Image (cartoon, rainbow, N blue to C red; front, side):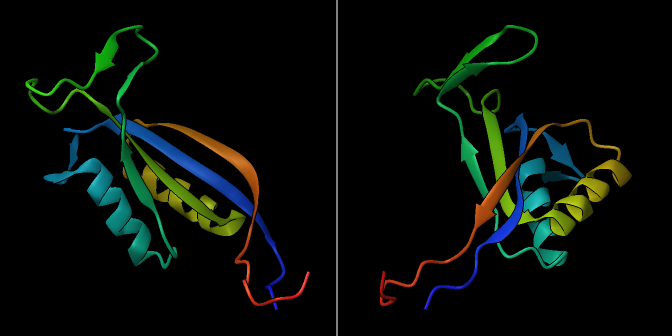
Length: 114
């Protein structure tokens, strides 16, 4: 049987892939800290192309040096976990663009009857 769906937040953070915090790549630091908080999972994605608030276009090219691409780190969490993660980012005084969206999530059991 499927578990009852949970209401929560889809939390996304955006950063340049070469940005560091405490000597560690920021996306890696954020994933590690979320794990320490007991957050069940998170994923980092590198962009192919895009632009930000300054209007500068960034595109991944094979021969180009890495570092200017955007990385998005996503978490699907309870509202309480989203608040804890946001508090961590604020306490670390990180300047990050984020998006927080309401979400329903759960696990579907393939053996459960419809």
